[in-house]
Each structure stands twice: as structure tokens, then as C-alpha cells.
Length: 268
Image (cartoon, rainbow, N blue to C red):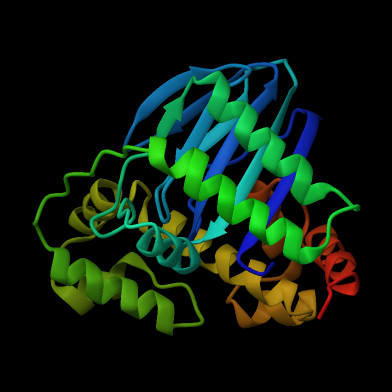
């Protein structure tokens, strides 16, 4: 199912830098304690049974309490696919503007999500059975209980921000603050404040995050890692690998290997 990516981490001590996904993400804590933080929701401690909903493009980080390990599940749903499902069920939680991440401490929601993930990992179920289970669980059990709060963003320089985001998406190389400043006639400091207020990240952090989300897609397609690091504008392959692991918790090679294994079992 190309519109859903799900994984489990057991007894993990891996830590992640602040990042965002182009997907709607659902996380569940199975064991241990961790700290969830976001520029849009503050910092909160989460424990076993907590379900965390993170809308697309929302900055966040979730890491174990210092010196401890934790186990968790993480599901990423393609935003376009999920919006279509919401349309079919006459719900509309994922429009524009963006929404804040939200933590649910509801035993039934946690159990429903865990049951769904167990079935998605099951080798006994066919592709079609898994797809039906995913849609049914989301539409009947999880989505009806979701009520996300909108993010209130200042109207200041939003056209300029959109212009810069388009530049970032079209350029292979990383853009400097000076280049951005010349493009929209705002000071470098004003641009930093604009990015942090609207996206929760600095301009450079946003560019790194955007390129790593691109890398995920290209790695799934089997693109050579050395070629990819060059195409995305990284100074060298080791720099790309360090950033990829800091934002995803795994290496590009392992990420690609896992997806190759999945594709080899695809019914298509």
C-alpha cells in the first residue's frame, strides 16, 4: 500500500532532531516514557497508551526520557489519500490552514490503533484484507474521535514566505539567508523569525527537512545513495547520511533495504 508506511521500534534509545513529515502521522507509545515537543503544541511528557496525531508539515520531535529506552509504533498516511477518505466519510479535519498536533490518552483508541498495526504487519493477511482493515479502522474507530485545533498564523509576509518555499522546492542547492533576503527584500533576521513562526523551524532546518522528505521518496524508487546525496545538494554522502539518520532514526541504506524487501513481496 504506497499510501501508508508503518513501523515499530522496540527498546529504542534513538533521538531525533526537530522535523516534519509530508504525511499525516499517528504514533503510539507501547513501553517507557518520552518527551513530545512542537513549536505549535509546546512540550509534553507521554507514557504507555498515549496516541499522538501529527498533521502534515507540522514541526515536532519525540524522544525518550534521558537515560531510558522506549518502544513505539509510528504510522505515516499519505495526506492526499487520507483527505479523499475523509471526503468519502463526510469529515473534514485536514484542510488548510494546518492543525496542531494532539495527544490522546484513550485506552480504546490506543488498542484500536495497535490492533490495526498488528494486522498490517501480519503475514497471514492479503494486501486487500489489510487495505480494508486500514480503511475501516480509520473511518469507523479513529477519525470520528479526532478533533484537531487550527494553528493561528500571523498574516505577516505570507506571500513572501510562499515565494521562498517555491524557491526552495525548485532549487537543487541550499539557499543562503542572503539569497532569500535579496529575493523578498526582508532582512535575514526577519526571514528567520518568519520561518520559525509559520513552520516551527529555521530556514536551514526547513531545507534539510524538505530534502530528507524528498530522499525518502527517491530511496523507495531505488535511487543510488551517492547520486541522491549529490542531486539533493549535500556537500558529500556522509553529510547526507548524518542528516538523514538525525531526522529519521535510520540510515539511507537500511531505509532503502527495508523498502526493497517490501516491494519484493508486493502483489503487483
